[in-house]
Image 1 (cartoon, helix red, strand yellow):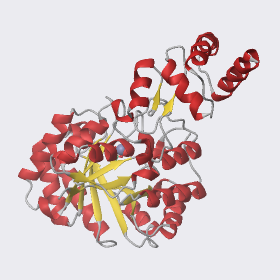
Image 2 (spheres, rainbow, N blue to C red; image 1 turned 120 degrees about the vertical axis):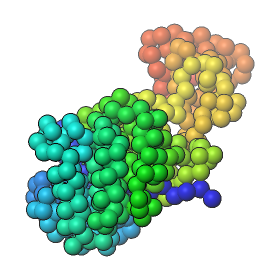
Image 3 (cartoon, helix red, strand yellow; image 1 turned 180 degrees about the vertical axis):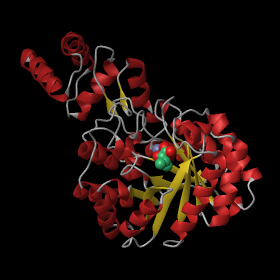
Length: 386
Ligand code: KIV
Ligand code: ZN
């Protein structure tokens, strides 16, 4: 049996940190409900101390959504934790997500502290959060650049303090997949009590490795992946939910599964893109406009013969109606004929030859030949033949 990987969606917290993507409470509730339909296990609803808007959104989401765990972010600071707990008061299952930077970079040049004091603050924060909720997730910010042995010490201490989930963020997107996977393995093998907690990944995409790192970590024992719809988030973004979920689905041999209803992936992606006013890049894996579009003649011919010649995901599986054959000057007769047939236009072999010559002129002029252009082309041909 495949192992369950929990999907922790942080679109409404890390995702919403993208400049220009801010949402009001009503919009956040709409997205939270869509995430519930999608089947995410955890929704990070906001960072309540950061603004009254975030505080109110965590309350509204807690009231609107029943199945996923609702989590609120805090620093390892009592007033942050108080505010997070207050915002979570209506959550059916609430989790406080608290933490502190653990890399020397963060300890010495951001917190201006030292390793021992940071460890003490980490433990104190977890103990303080436990006064409010049973479920406390601890994040070791910049764990990607944190010394292994020190990270293991911090993790052991926060488990003793009651942390239920251990988040190992690659905050700066620095790690390589092997390195990040090894980090998880090291913690699994060297932290006493590690089996009492769930190890979580939280990867940023500065080197384009967030998805690969998350999967590597899951293959080494992490059982929660933190991610966002469309991979949005700080700087180059976070791990993309749709990509990690489909990787696990398409590779049953890695024995990992999720609760995601994959047919809701595309509608959720579109909703987030629309409400956040953030277009999805056309070549984005799984949800981009071109993810199921074929434009070269050789590929089109192959897909028309059997979709699986050039597609490893059935578009219906992720909520996209169907693959598309995009007609350009690179398309062949098979593609032209296929799209004409889809419009109910059946041509004989000779008619198709004539249509194809006209089509190529049109394609050079228009770049993409759309359905309306095809209808006109067919009308012209039939008026000439009478
Ligand atoms: O990237 C990061 O380290 C974070 C933490 C606050 C979890 O977003
Ligand atoms: Zn982050």
